[in-house]
Image 1 (cartoon, one colour):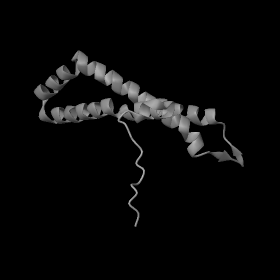
Image 2 (spheres, one colour):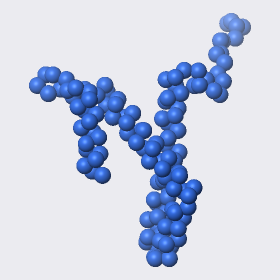
Image 3 (cartoon, one colour):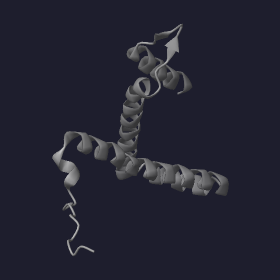
Image 4 (cartoon, helix red, strand yellow):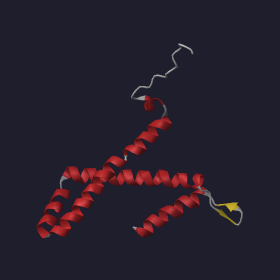
Length: 120
């Protein structure tokens, strides 16, 4: 049996700031925070809609608060950023072939944005 201690690499709390790939990843993952707020707001909005006109009016008043509006704009920006990064990865993760030829990456990304526009 050896008395040597195993090597343990030091890990700081800001390890991800040293490399652009990890910074981008952390920013992308942080976009979930305003989306959580938006989801909670919508859930309470549905609850207030069920409770009646007074509760609905109170929820609309809350949603008109400038801080809530800014948070919702951040949630929209985060959602669009998330969609853009997902759509740009899609052709690499799942290449689409038609008659043995790979579809152009730009066509796949634009088709996904077209689907979003059509659904919206």
